[in-house]
Image (tube, rainbow, N blue to C red; front, side):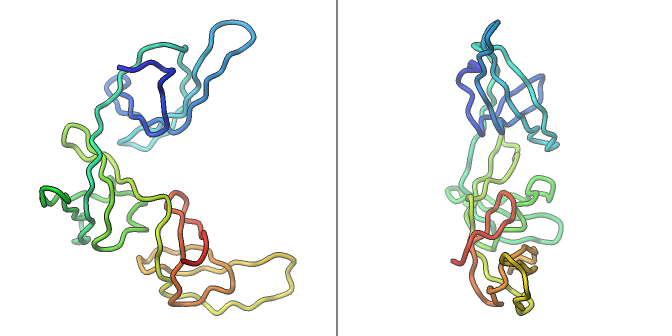
Length: 185
C-alpha cells in the first residue's frame, strides 16, 4: 500500500484487479478544495491509457513487480526466447508481451523483463540503443531550407527516418521509446 502522494513514474498499481503502470502524474492544489493527484495510467496487459484523478493522501494498492535481468536469445518464429542471467532458465514470450521492443532487440542483448507473480508483463529496454543501418538510399540534397530525412532499414528490419548524410553500414543511436534517430554512434 502507498498513498497517492508517493506515486512515481513506472510504479505499477493494482486497481480493481487490473494492473496499471503510472505513465505521468501531477500534484494539483486548486484555489478551493483539497489537493488532488492527476495521473495518466497505462493498462499493463492491454496497453490502454486512461486519465485518472485521485484525492491527495488516498491509499492505493501497489503491485509487487519483479524486474529481472534477462538476455534475449532468439526469435523462433512464434515467440521470443529469453534467458534469466542468474538461473539460466529460458522463457518464451509472445509478441503481445514483447510489443515494440522487438524492433530494437538484437540476439544476446540484455533486457529487463518485468514480472508479477511469475507472469511476464512487459520488456524494459534502455532509453537508446546502437544499431547498424542495413540499407538506405543515397541522400540527394535538394533546394530546401532545412535538413531533410530519408527512410533507413535497421539491422533488426525496422525502418526509421535518418538525415540525408547517413549511409548504409553506419552505426546510429535510436530512441527505443518512439523509434527516432538520435545521432551517430
